[in-house]
Length: 256
Image (cartoon, rainbow, N blue to C red; front, side, top):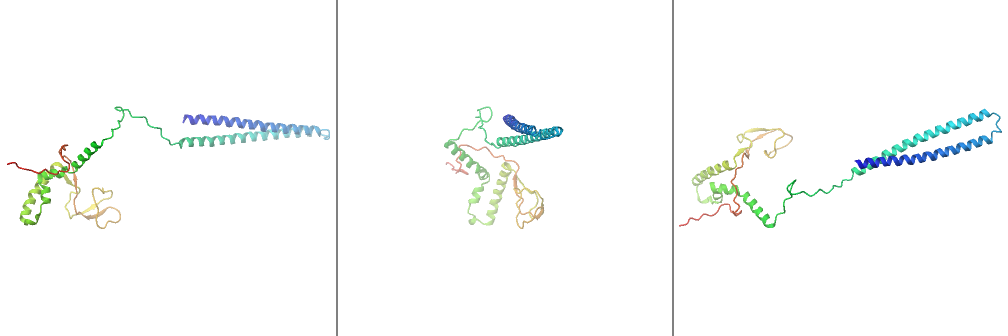
């Protein structure tokens, strides 16, 4: 901004100088024309019998010349001022339009924000194994405490309904205790399924999914098909870094 102001002042000074020179040239031309008119009056003075008339003509010409010079000077001043405004605006727009970003200084370690070092290929593989293990962590817990994977992988065709029902009861109770212990799930809408409910305007689309004949704008009235679930507190055990991420549950061998 300071550089722009200095350029504007220098521009105004140059415009003033050039218009002063132009004004002086015009004044010289006017003075020269006045001299020619005076010589013409002197030439014809002997032919005119009334000297007072000649004096009045000369005085009128002087007044006309002064008025024209004043009008020209004022016009030049106005034109110079307008030219200066336009050029100053162009300079400021040119500087504002310069969107080049100065390179940021390097960040000093330990003071502002240290740039983390790039991970090696081994470190990336180790991080990938941890992420994979984390995605199977809850399933491992449900298998360890409720035998969920055993039940889902079991071929139930060889069992009757009474045997399946007895097995499901124990698995359901164990898995329920594990979920409440580690995830603490709560219903998104704590109402009975099949009940008629109202979905107001501004509802959270991540929490409520609309199905069926959805048209128009909320509020909507519909039937609760599923209450949904959300966690109120995630309390999973700490991962062990030495575990194979592909193992959901290790095999068990009893030594005789």
